[in-house]
Image (cartoon, rainbow, N blue to C red):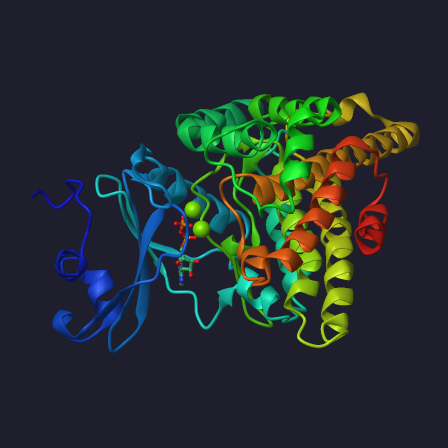
Amino acid sequence: PRPDEYRILHEADLRDYLAGLPAIAARLGGEPASWSIIEVGDGNLNLVFIVRGTAGGIAVKQALPYVRLVGESWPLPLSRSHYEYLALTHQARLAPGLVPAVLHHNEGLALVVMELIEPHVIMRRGLIAGALYPNFVGDIATFMARTLFFSSDLALPAAQKKEGIAAFAGNHALCKISEDLIFTDPYREAEQNRWTQPWLDATAAAFREDLDLHAAISRLKLKFLNAPEALIHGDLHTGSIMVTEDSTVVIDPEFAFYGPMGFDIGAVIANLLMAYLASAGHERSPGERRLFEVWLLETIENVWTEFSHEFLELWRTESHGDAYPLTLFPGTAGAARLEAERQAYMARLFGDTVGFAAAKIIRRILGLAHNADFELIEDAKQRAVCEARSLRLARAMMVETFPTIGAVTKAAREIR
Ligand code: ADP
Ligand code: MG
Ligand code: MG
Ligand code: MG
C-alpha cells in the first residue's frame, strides 16, 4: 500500500510506519524491533497505541471507519482525525501545556502521533478512586476561558471567525452523534438506549412523556445546532482529561466544531456532578469519602467561578473582535454599560451551562453511552439509587432556574 493509503494499522505495520519517520524514530530511540507497542484505547471510537523505545514514548491514535463501541454496522468518517488534529494544534496555541503536543499526522491514514502523557491517569478513574486534584480547577478554567474566548467574536475579526467555522463545518457526522445521542434518544424509545433495570424503568418512561423536559432539551438542541459561538472541544468529560496532582492535560477533541460554549463548561460540571452522586456507591465504610465529596462540590463551584473570572478578564483586556465596538461605549457611562453587558453575557452563558450539564447527565444514564462512575458500582440497586438521584437533579437543572452555581451544588447536596 502507499504509505498514506488507509488501512487499519496493526502492530507490525505501525512499527514499520513509525520507523520511516526520522523525528519519531529518534524520539523513541533504539532499534524499531525493540520498541514496545500496546493498544490501550478505552474510548468508544478509536485505536490508541502507546509506543516506547529506549529514549522515550509516544501515543498514536488512529480513527476506525466505524464506531468502535458498536462495530462495523455503524460507519463513521475517518475525517474526524483531521478535525482532532486541527483542534489539538489550535488548542496548543491558545492554551499551551494543557493539550498533548502533536508530533505527526497523516490525513490519509487518519492518524495522529502525539506526545505521551504520563504518569497521568484518566481523571474519571482517579475520581472513582476518590483522589483529589488541587490544580485541576485552575487548569480547566484556563483551558476553557482561553480556547473559548480566543475563538469567539469577542476576540476575532468576523472574517477570521467565519473561516474558522468553515474549517470545522465538515465535522458534522460527529455533531450528529451528539445531536442524536444527547439531545434526542434518551427522551424517546430508541434501540440503543439502556438503563439500570428494573429500578429506572418508571423514570425512563416518565422522561419519554415529559413535555416540559422535551421542550427544554429541544431548546438546547437548537442552540447546539445554531450557535457557533466558539471552537468547542465537544466531548469534554472526565474521560477526556488526564491528570496528576499538579498537571492537567485535555485529550480527544475529535468532536470539535464551532458551537455553544456552555456545552464544554456543562460537560465538565456534569461529569463532576456525576462523580459526586456516584461517590456513595464507591464507599466501603460510611463517611469514608466525605473529604473527597466536599472537595468535589467546591471544585464544581470553582470551575464556574474561575472560568467566568478568567473569561471576563480576557474580554476586558484582549477584546479585538468585531462584537461590542468600543466606539459605541465612550466615557465612564459607556464603560459601565459595557461591563453590565459582560455580566449579562455571563448570566446567559451560565444558564446554557446548567442546561447542557443536565443533558449530559441524562444521556449517561438513559442513553447509549454510560460512564464508569456509575457502571463500576457493582450492586445494581445501589447504582440505580445513585442514578435516580442524578436524574432528579438533572431534570430540575433542565426545567427550573438556577441563578448561581451555589444553587446547583446546594441542590446536588440535598437531592435524595
Ligand atoms: P477515543 O476517541 O477513542 O475516546 P481517546 O483519545 O480518548 O480515544 O484515547 C483513548 C485512551 O488512550 C485514553 O483514555 C488514554 O488512556 C489513552 N491516551 C490517548 N491519548 C494519549 C496520550 N497522548 N498519552 C497517553 N495516553 C493517551
Ligand atoms: Mg476518549
Ligand atoms: Mg488557571
Ligand atoms: Mg474520542
